[in-house]
Image (cartoon, rainbow, N blue to C red; front, side, top):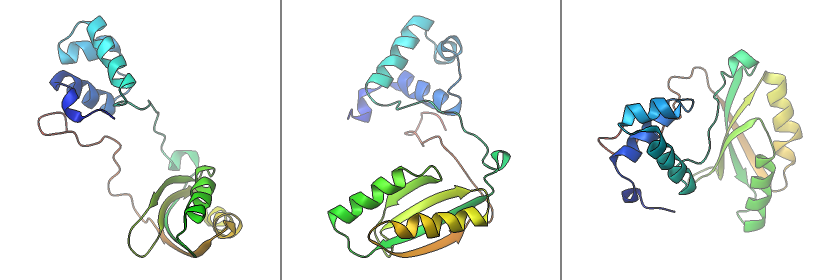
Length: 162
């Protein structure tokens, strides 16, 4: 993994602009950062090759595609042994409704963010998927009533974007 000091202010500006709109054309990007298109494209490719840019995605509105329910689920395992952790993580990685899964400190072993169309789908996920994963000991759900903030752009160091 590269150190953040290995990139300069132009690279930071490129990263900031691409986080805001990954469909920015190379010509637009070059103009915005004060480069000609060819060196700009070379910088983008280098940022990709060095792992600063991991992928490009299109963000969809969950409600527009029928995913009305957003739930945060805390999961405690019966035992915190490596095999149980691996089993749980593999099961969650295979589930499309699991948007995020974090190994946690504190009361819960894992925190999941799950999106589903309705309460029946949530019940099905909890009863027929989550509770059947070997080693799951306790499941606690909290519904998101309102999304106050949702951001995908990472905060960059002072003076770069934002």
